[in-house]
Amino acid sequence: MVLRNPCMLLLIIIFLGIYTGTIDMCVRSGGDQSCTDIGGVCQDDSGKCGGSYYSGKCSGGANNRCCTTSAEEKDTNDCSGVTIISRDSWGARRTKSSSIIRVPVPKMFIHHTVTNPCSSFSECISRMKQIQNYHMDNRGYADVGYSFLVGEDGKIYEGRGWSRVGAHTEGYNSVGFGISFIGNFMTLEPNTVALNAAKALIQCGINNGKISTSYKLYGHRDTKSTDCPGDKLYDIIKSWPQYHHDP
Image 1 (tube, rainbow, N blue to C red):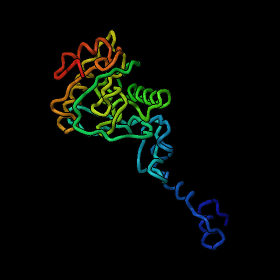
Image 2 (image 1 turned 60 degrees about the horizontal axis):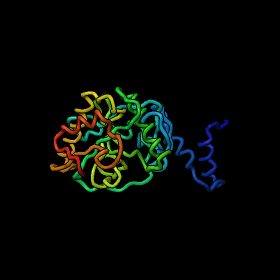
Image 3 (image 1 turned 90 degrees about the vertical axis):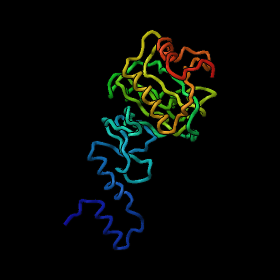
Image 4 (image 1 turned 120 degrees about the vertical axis):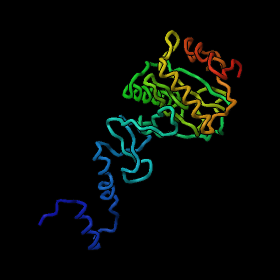
């Protein structure tokens, strides 16, 4: 009988005492099957992923995770009033480094990404990947800079999230979250569902003890000379409760 399974042959060789190495290669191959079953490939999650990342489907260390070709919409379930699409769902690369932010934060900062907008899950995760890649590969950031991003599909996309210091508002990153609307809002306003999603996110942060009840809200241009968050969006947030001009 000819043994065509190389792992079975290796087990027999080990049993006979001829080989004293390990069977890690065979264990890894078998352990990755659950990733293959969902159309994924096991890879280090510092790399770019075309779809979503999944944990627990690959052998090896915790950073060896399953990357699929298509993305699955997964809510973080942090908030009852708005959907927050998780980092794993949009296929975020692993951050290079991070610092814990002290909560509740006293300040909130509104931005826009100055990219094309997005109005569907597929469009928005594509923008998220582009923005993260630009921030990490071109700007030298450890991760996507914003705490959260808002799509015109009415969903929030998790950036650095509730627990990590962002890279969005120089001089204020450690004392506030940065919310960025996906798109360019110099001459156009974000749609109503995007604006409502951002408001719901802020209220959720207050309810969950992440944002101070006495927080102050600013546009990025209130902290430096910049067009951000765009003329139209800036005009809108100036009418929001707890807006302040001088940080």
